[in-house]
Length: 619
Image (cartoon, rainbow, N blue to C red; front, side):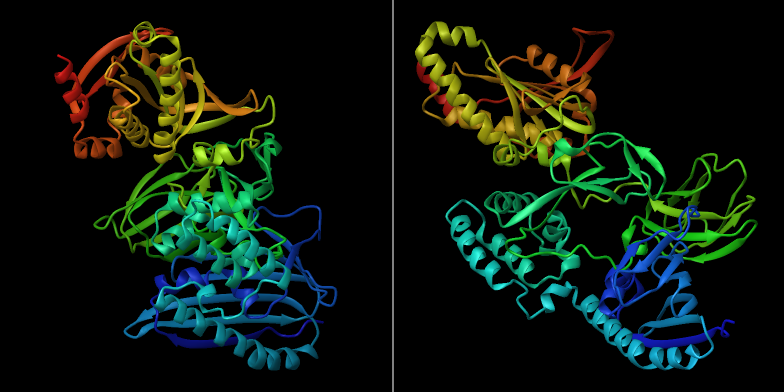
């Protein structure tokens, strides 16, 4: 016979606003660790699991508790909760609900438990345990989170203990000498070392350089370069994390790109998916095990911060209607459910509708478009015959990870990790990539005028200059074809900057005269990455078009497609550039693309003052 449910409720006043403390308090993986709960593991209770549910147990021999966990529910930044149904252990059921209510002094935090012990004799013991030890741990943890939120700092910045073992400290000292002797930014390296020394295992098992760069207010590429150098030296290691494009959670991690083989299976969605270089393959780092061993422990794996792109998640019974309280940043969102097809497109604007009811019918969502305000009176209704898990999520992916497209378009990464290639025969899509082909204008004339020996020397020197300029602007050379170079970038403006940088260096370098003129073709779009000649190469229409563009160009000229030219970031860069002589609108037919004329832009780069002076003196 089960005991009667016990209701336990605590309230605390905290100074931070709900949206300020939400990133800390909704990180249930850290929360349960910090209040002293044991780590958990996936387990098998039954063969059938309701979609969205989890079967879990504590990862300790002396803690025999097994439970089925309903999907977490939350409404950013005011509420989250979960219900556990125990199959073994001291409890039958536990329900946890946490609400954050803003007031004039900050926030009133209300934490409620409804606990059903498995046996009557346990009621008194569990009540005492909750009201003493557990309450004290929770209170201290929440007050610490309040301080962190107000001071806008990370937990590792408050840590005083050096967590490296003696052997790790000794090896670190040796590696730092090697790194300081290279061209690594010492100030960034020191920040990374402090992070490795002070942060706990939850922070270190998956380090994202861009997140740290944003927190440190440093350029992302500068921080990434130090991470790459530190990995090559042996301070760090890296993994490729494979994200499901539907639920956006990590489903697999591999040590090398060659271990990726499609399709990938998502256990949460119970479906297969294909990966791509832009979104679903990301690079993460951790300390090298000889420096510091990091445990792969989990304390909660389905809380709000495990899916930060989801702002509202609700589990509704058939025909149930629920009123929600949330606070949404402006932008576009998708409302979907785990058992129905389609989605509704939600646009959040400051002056939009305040009261909105969205219903899910048996046929699913039909692409409904709804405008709502930032703090709407939003209601959801499940008009289907089965339970549904509703998710309101950001349409855009958060760009806080180093994508495979970015890593493999880094010259530094390609140089230091040349063996990072795809398995033979594997083809992985790349949604957005900028391809640049360069060539020398009238290179045959250079050989005729300069002679073979001098001309070859200039060709080799010009390749070195191109590699430097391309690397300086976040790109990488894929291959050389005669006098031509094929390079990749994530952004077209970086490709254009690289061209300008190379042109400037060629103009001012005394090894070259005014006969050496660079031309380029740039195109941005999708392509396919493959393993060719033991390196990552790219194929597809975007590549072919960029290669055709360079053939159309003259010296000091760049040819781009109309679509590439119209990119906002490239437009902004061109307006600020003082090196543009003219921009012309043209239309042309491209070999292999005769079905329609191409609208292109011809951008002529003005000669540098030094080259103009040399030309005038010669005349």
